[in-house]
Length: 122
Image (cartoon, helix red, strand yellow):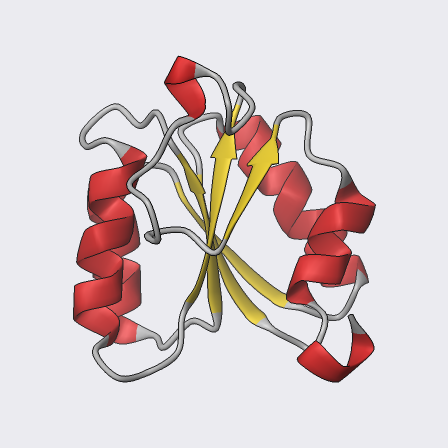
């Protein structure tokens, strides 16, 4: 089952490559390179999941995730933190309960595939 994914990363090459990889898995993937672009995109499209870089030029990724959750309201939104740090390192910490998953760069695509799979397929 295809998932509609928003990729938010200021590294445009990395975001675009991830979009292409997700498209090969038949997911609909869209890129935003700033937090504001992501908020604008999320206001127009109901995404199933968002992959959010924790370090963005205009807003911390955790704050973007919080705003996206608020914007989504009652609609389910799978939020995945993307960071160069592991979840245990100081730069990789996020607000507890805000993100559903944390992936360290470079992203292990098999892990991402499992995260995006329907619950019955995990």
